[in-house]
Image 1 (spheres, helix red, strand yellow):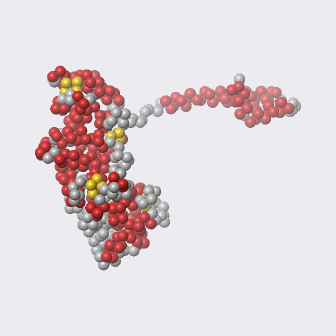
Image 2 (tube, rainbow, N blue to C red):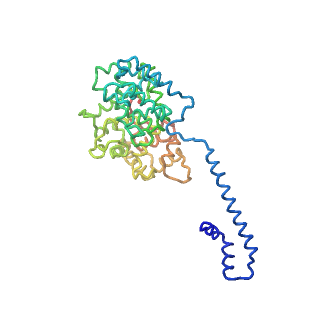
Image 3 (tube, rainbow, N blue to C red):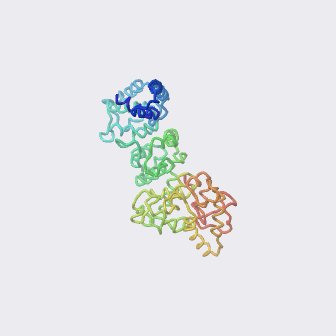
Length: 439
């Protein structure tokens, strides 16, 4: 009854006539009031009948979000489990060691080098073996909850309760690659290089796959990358140097040698003076200070102690060598964004350009006035708002002219390259550069 009274009072016309009736007004006819009351009740009933229609429409929308991958309609889990049990029956006591996990991985319809993640997820790293019952239980649960390779890989490698991968999660997997891949057999005689190679590969994985700068890789990021395709190629390609994006030993050797040249005391850390010697002191001191400020480094030691680790140097060198990738553009954008507001103002650009002018004048080269340089950069980037004299990350990423912008404010240039618009994209060449190509 109270609900009906509340609905009646919501209608302004009925409210008015009820008030007039209460005052005893003669010109309010009961028949007229009953007619209006009947119309109001019919309207309320119509609203109630329309509500189920809206609910039915919402229920008919098919599910479109699958964070763990789209389930496969024709997947026969019992058939897969029987194949795995058949493989385990060949082992003593139906227990598999790490050496036995290759056939098990293939029975799971996984790439060969998933064998250590499969082994460790079933507790094999603690006991030294995996029983058929323990493995079948783990893999059945994985198949029921994870429906594509990306979600399965994250589930196998991630720590309990985590839906993302951190850097140390990759160590057992990559150590197995070092131990068992034919293209890395020579490393068995050089165990000191194992950790260096693994560190390099991990940094390249996060550099190319992670887009969040959180030090984590999610299923979504893994799906968008080609990392798992490269893992599958490991068993087919005997020469790891052909897998240039992540696993190339030649690329690792170039990066490590560059670091070794700068790390004079060989403690695997370099300071600002060491980094200043890179590429014949081509990088400006202001840019070096920004690199050590912690804005693009993972370890707090770079900011607290003024030392850069080998892992952080890998990010620096790849960003230095290839300035057109999204990560490289964001790397240098973060360095130049002094106030962290996501915009490069003309004042920030001038701050870095001043040092370049001083170096050019010391070389008896007349520098291009900053105003002219800024106009040319604006012409290249073409900001959306007319008259805007600043750059956002979107501007530099979409226009793909970020490399010119970074070089203008980081390097000392060869004489004779005065115009940013001439000879794109390599119109401004640093005084010296790394001769090897990385990544």
